[in-house]
Image (cartoon, rainbow, N blue to C red; front, top):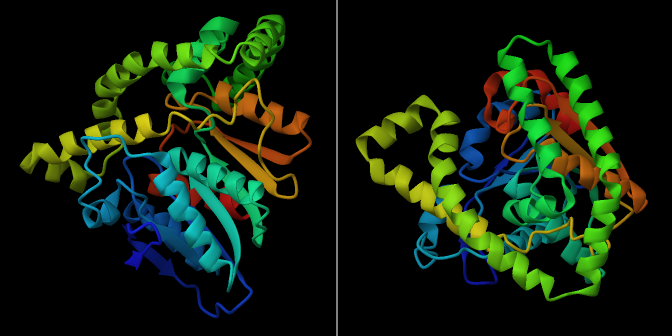
Length: 344
């Protein structure tokens, strides 16, 4: 347990590989919403077997860290800045001894990006070797859908969300991957004019931001209340489900905490169409997408990659066939993909 400069506490973990020494590269693992470092057991075991040490943490509102900060009630908004500040502190401390390879998922990847952005804006350079963004939250989802509605990109999202259905129908994963690529490229290019019109309007009319926030706040909270239980239960372990059966309030609290965190992440908008990406160009980024991701549709990740490449960033991509948003916490998926995702 570490005491942070903010007065908050955080639970951290350091699984060290044999022979780890000063100056070596370590993996800093940052989990996503509703998860914690405890969900990364196979991930950590695989990493250690390959000689790579893993430093993990439980973000504010998650795991053991949640229990350490009773004033951060799940009944209120938990600002993303809290997690960003805490991650920056951890990265600074680790960088005194090690090189850092960040591997972050979903909300955690959004936190990592914002931390890197703030370090960049203040001129602080840390020995970060690579940033792996897995199904990353690069734009607040409700704001994305409000913007996508204006530019016609909801059709593109619908094309993405057809992927899981095609998989259930027995369509080979490689065919789905080809379909996904064609649909997204065709639609993204086909609605370029409405996108440009939207971007120009946002840059010329800053007051539109207020309208976007107002329009999307209510539907966002309602959607998460409806969808969170399904996502939590569908991607939980047997032990977690057993615990919820004994104490249903645990699941209720988890769902409400997620909403508090999502509402606190409303300014996570690296796809802010009226601004340049505020990220350092000296870093190497890798964007990992799951073909059947229905939480952060690949449309969002692909547009982020497009804008990064256009801005001159070093970025590579990897698409996982047959996987959904939660592949990071699946033992079979990690045994299969860990090396290619995190180490390659």
